[in-house]
Length: 597
Image 1 (cartoon, rainbow, N blue to C red):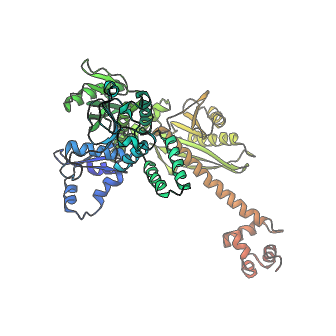
Image 2 (tube, one colour; image 1 turned 90 degrees about the vertical axis):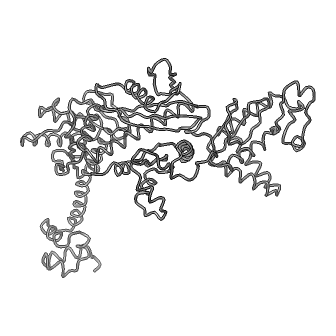
């Protein structure tokens, strides 16, 4: 049986995120980021490391935890926050107090805009953080090209301006400022420019980029190629500009974030601790349902236990729906913006944890995995019994020629290939898919009844209402209607039809129940096509040989037995043909394929 560490490696997601290594005492050894968590983490355990420190690190790893994020940039920022919080022994970089850069719009009359690494809580607006200083500088340069802003630190109080305390500086004469210090620019006009700049920083700079491209072309036409190249370099930097980070936001401070995802038997819950605008802690686990608890009950239980466990003093929590956790804690259910995105990130981590648990259970305890899948299918498809034995039917023909059908069998959610059956359509002439389905279903279950074989709990018909109605006619004749659940699945929108119900059921595209049904349908289609293609190939070969005048079926059979294909019969010499079917018939065959000779 795999060790817990091996299991974790097998079930890691292929998503960007941050991973944390822990030792036997649950002490954090290392924090790293990855574009693909599975590839990056697995590489530690599959490579021969030249660095002795890395070899020692790998030997000490007992468990792995990870946080899934939306982008590689978010992973970089989250890694920075976690390293500064926990200071793991084997991390070298990012342990200092140096932070990533922000863009600040200062809270003052005629606000200044500048790059900073220090977030001060004075009411100013901060955007970022950014992983590239070059990108920030390029953005600020482009902004200043369009909107001349003041760079001085004067206190531009109306009284000081009216008394003429300040004089315009060189920046005004260079055209980089409009002289707000002497009252040459109104506050309203300046604030309009700040509003436009705020929109650009948030990423809404499509029109601005168009203006700069035009400026670049204008410089090029004037043969001022150096100026054009400067603008081009700035535009290239901004092509991959990221306006927002989900994992770092200075407006969110000292908050706990909780979310829950559940199925029939368990709830999967996630907790984020946010301090100073950054995620500094994450914890995800599963809770077994004892009395069919609701998501609200599970989340309330988890919130109380987790806040006690981590000694959280946060006065506010973010959750996906209203919960009751006492009067001393403010409960916020975000609907839009950054707060909503952080709750969605928490939900995403809970979903990934659930998927990983399923994968681990599938490896360690296959019976529990099957039981869960069957229970989920029973619920999703509104069945009275778990569909341990499922059979799916599909027809194949081309304009009514060589019609075939197939029945594939799944037991406990897996193909039972020894029970697959092919059918040649016997009673139907022409392209009648409905009649073919009626014939095959009748033949299948008449035989199972005659041989006293077990019947399936669910029949799936590949097709819509028409094919389903045809299959039902056969079940009526055999007296099986109501004894076996039957559904039809239409390919176009994956609609599931029930007998007597004109309104189809739509399952979640990511649900395991729909994936198993699609697997059954695709397997039936593949298996049916196999027989159809074989029949079509055989009939094509025989029809070519049957065109030879005065050559009977027995002769054709003899030739195919010897030469295996019509193509080899065509290329055979007269002597080779004579040795098999005699000289007289050999001449007829040879002259048919070689008339000139």
